[in-house]
Image (cartoon, rainbow, N blue to C red):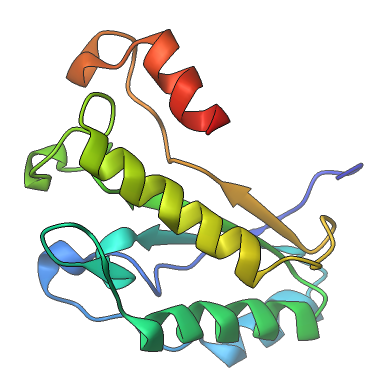
Amino acid sequence: MDRPLYGFNFQWLFNSDRGDGPVEPDLQALDFLAAHDLQFVRVPIDYRYLVGGEGYDQYHEANWELVDRILDACRQRGLYCSLNLHRAPGYCINRNELERHNLWTDPQPQEAFIRLWATWARRYRGIPANELEFDLVNEPPPVGRYDMTRENHEALMRR
């Protein structure tokens, strides 16, 4: 984007560790943004709403469709949407101890991470970059924490 964007963070697909479920987009909030010349919607996402199971291989299609509806609602109002994988398989800046694997060292969550992003890439192919962005993983840890190195971070992001 050429100019700064202003808007809000909506946690419609986050906080599953509290037992909350995903919620539909608040269309009134999106209308408010558009009416007040705000242009940006950040949607932090907890992967557990989208995939489950021991191998992270059970897709929850209803929640993928919720992401579709959020994105459509933003696009209809001319709002730029950032899909942020806030809790990735094997890592989260908040309450990482909830994860049973390590994204930076374990193949199983790495493969799930790749599948998530491949699914998003296929699903949203053709949406212009001035309408949608992807934040691959929210706030990676400092080098050395959770065994994250520059090398394993770069290798995973390039994949």
